[in-house]
Image (cartoon, rainbow, N blue to C red):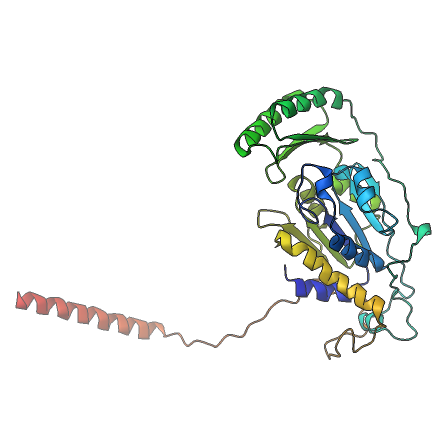
Length: 370
């Protein structure tokens, strides 16, 4: 991912959607919830991103909603949206504040004309209670959870027989972790567990996913996913002129990446180099610095008044009448090439004849000498 290019698009956009996977992208994988708590640096970056009223920020996680409420509470992050238990629970984020002048150009909105009030940046301390729903919402359609009574004893049995493993029970998911077990024995037990569970839930609306990256086996309703949760929480993705989706877990992020596939305004980023629907990748240690780079844009806007000297340099290529806030796609790279004079067919044929004659003469000389 070209972070400089992302920042350039970020600065020029008016409505942004940031979808961030928690486990493995914002925080390291961990078997126990207490080991997966966010760092103060991460919370600070999220607070800065949420402070910008042009941003809609969602954090996706497979963790319990109680854990996320404790780590990323409404008190400290009132504008942050959360998706817990891989899509079963949703805590909505407020939509970006409506622009008073929908025809405002890129230059007018970012250069901070004195009479322009379309750009509104909230201070981190501002709590907009009227816009935010503090309640968690379950799926709109009823979800069958009767399979849990049959599956839970199997997971408990594998937990007892696999030293170092752990079982996490949530409202809609059962997660068996083998991260702290013996590597060889743990992966073998995980494969056996997956095969066993697939037989048990064969005719149930349930999916069983084993992740070698997260070192877990997850059982959850087939109709529950982060992508479905986002579609229900966000009326339209077309209203955003920049979408950034960063994810790690294969069984959840790919569902989200599919939502934005083909969008000219989206940056879909997977963590680590692997096959994915994502268009870009970042290493795990690069995710937080990238968010801090974007957060710095908001911090600059909050701390100082916008002016032409502080935001965009004057350039003749800036379209002052443009109604869109970013290009349909990144500007293609161009290169200049020096023309090459290729020989004609006749010249090539003549050269070939000379080579053949020289070879024949060499063979004849060798024959005479022998």
